[in-house]
Image (cartoon, rainbow, N blue to C red; front, side, top):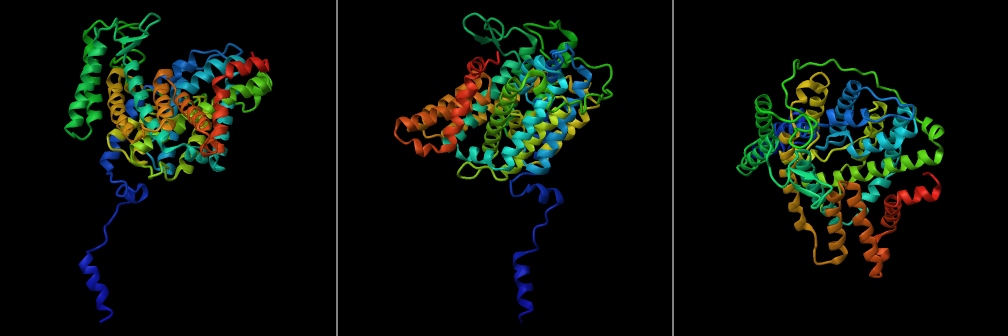
Length: 485
């Protein structure tokens, strides 16, 4: 009898559910996702951020180091794609989150225009390696996790909302849908307040198509919109007179059909790094100030993006904490250092990953798709170079709108959260920086808690972070007082 009871129970419950190797490794079932969703999300993320393959070389290649040397554009293109591929794959395999990495735009500007004029390129990239090492140390010691967990839940939601507004703004600016002016008003629609160019038509068509497909729950809505808009852009470019630059142009990426879809990668810049030489060339104090800027930008830009995307993807617990955060942060630091080794500047988590999350990506399998796309782009850079911002940017606008829904999770009746949350949200798009938004929110929160006589409730860690941000915002004044300038 006893031997027959287990057989009865097994027959009642049925055979155990079989999970494939991908499902088991990435926990697709646990996160209610599928291989198809992850692949679509990963490909969408790639197209949303593929511009970095072209833009990063233009930024770094357009600057000179202290000796007047410039970096090779073809070599930078190869290294940018290689670095993004390795970092993104590593995050997918180790962190198991849909967060792609590539050379950070804010960080590469610091390298190009603040570090390089004071030292050689290998020495500047050496500071990038040190930045990554410091971030790894902060991650493995638990300090970075402690800081992220110390941030109030309301501010974490505000970071997600702010990133939503930020990426939508990025999308509109990159597409030329919103332009800046030295006159009043500082921002305007298109050219002179009107959408009078063919690139603007592509942006509007892509955005409207994505909205219609998304609300009708068509699988791959964002990806379909990007592909259709790219085809439209190629047709327009072949038949209309589009200026090469300035108002009305496509911007960095022009949708011209290339003569060849294949390019031979040039790995000449790999390993061209001098880790400590910058301190001797520029001086210990000057190099330390540059390193401080790199660390703080990389630290909080990635932190805000990780929190925002995790929140949007439903990967946080009730307290707003991200499971496996230590691994995610460690990979972020290693990836930053690897960016220095490749001379492509520090890698960081890209906010454009939210486009993939909007397509349903929930696991690191999406990163595998994105990383493989970057690897293929090593040889197919001409093909990746035909997707203009006007075709990919609408995905950022739509995802930004979806991320704004998290504003309902913030308690707007308590001024201790209302004002810091508001500053966090508006500082990101207004100053074009996630770091600035996080800093403004934390400083405001600790200040309000002190004004209410509840300074201890804010926690000693947030007070230290607030002081660091005060130094960061007043860095020019600090440099003058220290005699760096």
